[in-house]
Length: 394
Image (cartoon, helix red, strand yellow):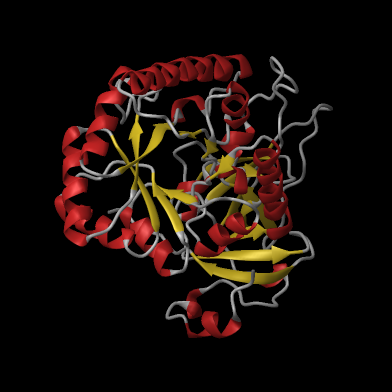
């Protein structure tokens, strides 16, 4: 699991890493992106067990962690492979030994599709399509390279982004097969349902999505194409997709780290026979207090170190509100407790741990993740991983 020290020390950017293997947590420079390895591994094991007990395939989304090392840990725990959204992400992970990758997104650019076809000769590759043009261009690229890929037809199940109308699934599946490509099933992901706060709202959204998937399955049956697999689901709704009997593969990503935004979802212990699998926070930004005023403290982690698209980070184990102080600063103000008292401000130099609002873009801001074993208080740096797909936009 650990980064070999020789690899770390010879990496061109190693001199900029905020820690080195064997350092105590206290020695990690700030701001730094830190993984609680014990919590992360429990998250990996919990979802793998959930999927395995139900006979479901697990294909986590690597756009969350952007790390070949973590992708391999997920596969070692039982995942069949990983998802990515961008071709360059797939290429970077393949170069680092990840053998089974699904690009759960459409690619229609001819030059990119030539790269897709080349990549298909090196790993087991899957890709989503939602248009005749995309299918035709993909087929031409694969034929030119003499390679093959699994092809999923994406349907719109409520996201309002990519994907065709479910009733058209059969038509596109026939077009896939007419080119001699392998039709693998349906891509059915409802991203908008992941952060609906009220459990009943999430349930209604996934029930509607399931109904649309069944329309797509009927469309396939009408043209004689079997639906081998429906893939989708996310950290906020995967138990609902699993209970539906429609989805056969889960694409959860954020479960590995569990950011503040997912933790803000209201939980229901049981909702129409569906339980709740809790995940632990495993990704933190380590910061330290750099200034103290009369009623606030300032830490050295501004929004260059954590994404703010889903709101501000949460202070871990501290009664403080985090306010945006700009690129390089975060402002902490005490929160009144039930008895009306406010906690004292921290001192200059004190460590403050932050839970990012949105883990995916937060990881993309960092060159390194620092894996700590033994907890945030007294742990030791075990792993230092480069963020392999940072900036992979194409």
